[in-house]
Image (cartoon, rainbow, N blue to C red; front, side, top):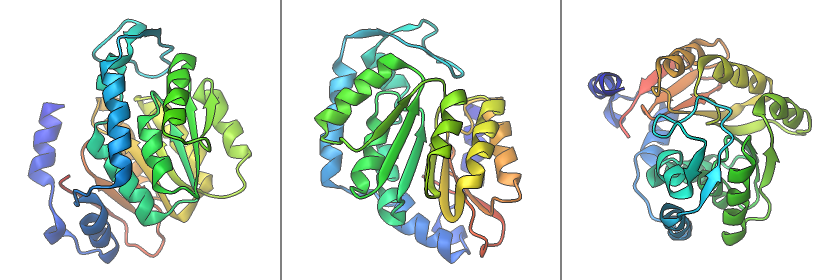
Length: 257
């Protein structure tokens, strides 16, 4: 992963390397800014509580597992440290929702629910559906949702291989935003992407986590970038942004974050 990051640093640019007005606007107004918002303080407090928790739970891991802890018994603070995205990514997701105003956000992989809350807080009028395979982390996530006063988040518990299709069948509108953070392997990542693809609209954004976490994830990212329905991708190393805007020339951007 270190070699991949060095390659990323050598290839990545900033606003001066962007010729697309859409991507320039996205980068300068959403990706690059370091903003402050009232929601961030509350979510920072929740994160600190999770990082201080000594509670131990039994984790049902249906994905690629953890590189840090191979045991299914894990302390909550370990999950908060190793499985949750750092705060700056939560703030980025919050800005993306505020900028794009998605009516429906689907998250694959709830974990402790901290990232879910950034999606939910950014658009009080929007719908957030989050899928998670582990009942114990769902229990903790629901507690965090209650503490944050977010009762509208719909949580679907169960193996995402089984629950994703059922959830999509019940949708009555396009998937405006999807966050893929459930299974860091090639086949499931591509399968989840292709399952969600018929529900994408011209304005949809699909976000992929940890695109250089492993060779499998990098292969999946390359497959997604090359897909004929994908027009614009933005590689931020830790995450990848995927757009389907038919009016855009197909182009892949590698940008500093």
